Amino acid sequence: MFLTSVLLITKVHINLSEILFTFNPYPFYFIGLIFGVERIFYGITGSSKLLSLIMGGGEYSSLSTLALFIFFLSFGLYVIIYTIAYTQIILQMLNVINGISYLLFSLSIFKAWHM
Image (tube, rainbow, N blue to C red; front, side, top):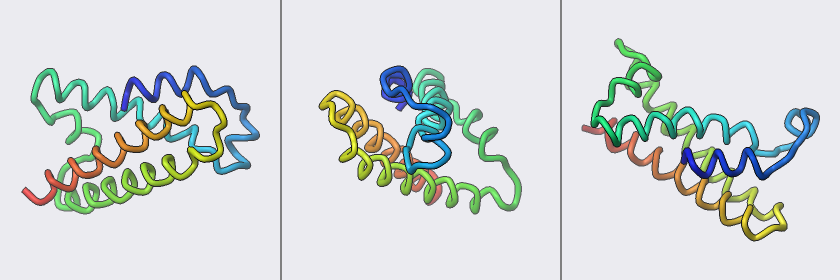
């Protein structure tokens, strides 16, 4: 998620009006950076403290986990569907990989939510 987001941010050149007035998934790449760093941190240390810091704790933590699962599931599907708009094969492949990483992250959240 982190690597594909970095590559897509550097390869896709877009201006602010296209971000605001079109359905381009460019802002989702920055969200992928944040959660990609979290996944790298989790992979190295095995600690889920950073994810719990991002999601928060307390009595509504299960609702925030469910919301995060739904958001990343929809982000992944949206990015994969938007891949049709790109003409370069490299950008299409990076978008599909990024969308699949969002889907896999949402599945890992769903798995952690049910444990």
